[in-house]
Structure formats: C-alpha cells, structure tokens
Amino acid sequence: MRNTIREIDVQLVREAVKEMCIEANYGLSEDMRTRLQDAAQKETSELGRGILHQLEENLAIAAKDQIPICQDTGMATVFLDIGQDVHFIGGALELAVNEGVHDGYTEGYLRKSVVGDPLLRKNTKDNTPAIIHYAIVPGDQVTITVAPKGFGSENKSRLFMLTPADGEQGVIDAVLETVHAAGPNACPPLVIGVGIGGNFEKCAEMAKRALTLDTREHSGLPHICALEETLLEKINETGIGPAGLGGSVTAMAVRILTYPTHIAGLPVAVNVCCHVNRHRVRIL
Ligand code: SF4
Image 1 (cartoon, rainbow, N blue to C red):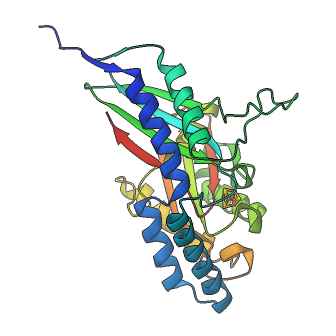
Image 2: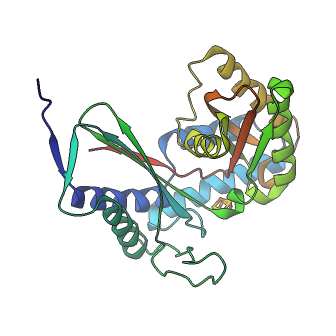
C-alpha cells in the first residue's frame, strides 16, 4: 500500500516564517505572559516587583504601538519538523525560510543583527541566514517553530562535557554556575533551557529547543520534572532577581530535554534566555 504524499508550496512556509518573526518580536507568547504575571505576584522584593511591572508596561506599549518588545530582535532560530509524507513544491525549502526571515525583519522594521562572516563581520542587512534545525517526523504536516534569540542571553550559555560520576548533582552545579556567571547580564528573570545527554552538538540543540517548550508545563518524565522544579528553586535562591537588582524571582521556568548518551559521558548544555523568551509555533 502506498501512502498519499501531501504537497506543500514553500511560499506558505515563507509567509508563515515572516509572520512568526514579526509576531514573536512584537509580543510575548501566551505561556510567557502567564509566567511574567506569576513572577510579579511571587516577587518578594519591592524593587523587583517594580522592575516586573515596568516590563509589563513595556509589553503593553509594544502591543499598542506595534513595535518590538526589545531592541535586540535576535537571530532567528527555526525548527522544522517535517512529516515524511510531505513533498515541498514551488522552490527550495531553505531559501523559502530565509526569504521569510528577510520579509519579516524588513516589513516588521526589526533590527538586523546578523553578520555574514563571523570574523569579517559585515551585516547581511536582512537578518539572514536563520539557524535551521530539520527533523523528519511521521505524518503529512509541517510544524514550524520560530524562536528569535538575542545575544545578551545567548552569550551567557554554556556547554559542559561532564563525566557519568558527576551525575544529577553535576547537572545542578553546571546550571547554577551558568546562572551565577550570567548575573544581571542576561536580563533576568530568566528562562533556562537544558539539554542533557546525546553528544556535544545534540545537547546544545536540545537546550535551544527546550526554550521553545510551554513554560507552564513540565517534563513528562518524573525524574526530569522533579529536576526542573529543583533547578528553578535553586536558581531563585541565588537572589539575583529581576534585572539583577536582587529578589526572589531570578528565573521563571526551567525546561529540560534529554537523549540517550555514551557510557563514558554526560553532556549538559545550558541555554540561557531572558524574560522575553520569544517563540511561535504553527502547523501547516
Ligand atoms: S537579553 Fe533579551 S531582553 Fe536583554 S537585550 Fe537581549 S533580547 Fe533584549
């Protein structure tokens, strides 16, 4: 029996990526709005609460005036989970994604922050290319996740090649070391994405993808769910607080993804994100 192949025009991908770049930069996702409201209620420091209210005010102004929620509109990370029964028509998929980023950053008047060569550093002037992660999944749909990420927080991210003997405590220490080193510079309150397992590059990709998960939820794996809660508690005990000015809410969420790994290693990646934690998801 032959499966039916579904054709999807890459122009739909281009249009979706354009709209998602703009939407993600103009307003928080629903889960992050909830997290920020919770943070304002939980924060015990008056100064911290004041900062959180200012952030909420900033979001309201951005929504009213249709302007970006932060001046650093980020480098666009795009996850494409492609159903194996999909056939793209109308052009090259990767080109369409980058054209979508070009359109979004141009039409949305978003800051162009990408340089074409990491050493020569000439701005590409349209925020391309995106960082694109492809996955082939069952089915005939395409799930697009667009996550523009500023480098104030990206620069504070770390990767640790731990040993198996380091165990869970080693993971906790790695995350806390990263948060302490970030201090006020990653615009707290933070969201922390953690990748555990796999190998060098796999754990980094998982940490990035973990930031796009719903921050109101927890891992379905009981021990990882418990670790997400433990880490959030310990991060908030650091007292770094909103904007690094002290307080009880240093992070609003910790999300973790895991993957099998080698008997000789325990790779851990910690992707630090600021309070905007931009992401949008669409299914074609
Ligand atoms: S870390 Fe986040 S809030 Fe701070 S400047 Fe960068 S994008 Fe903006």
